[in-house]
Amino acid sequence: MNSSFILYLSRHTLETTLLLSAPILLTCIVVGVVITLFQAVTSIRDMTLTIVPKLVAVGVVTLFCGGWILEVALRFTTEIFSQIQNIGP
Image (cartoon, rainbow, N blue to C red):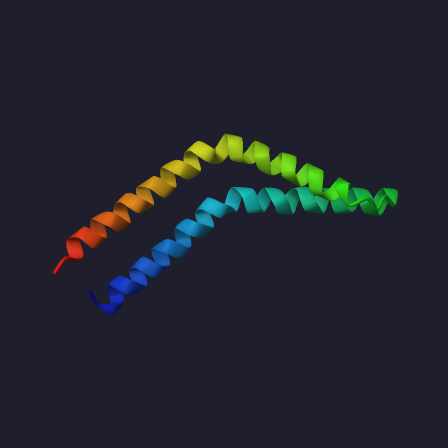
């Protein structure tokens, strides 16, 4: 195992993490901005108005993207275990 393999593994892990978390994080950002604009326009300052839509949006995105997220995570895990198997003594 050399330093280039460790750098490759670290980079691939970070890229996969960002790829898996992107749909949920982007949904939270978009819903948060829309709710903030709505609150600014209407002067409503209720905390449940910010939390509930985000939870619903994240749930819907998880339902739609859950299979894809699981597929990418399983592919990454399989690749990592095959790399570990190839290292060996």
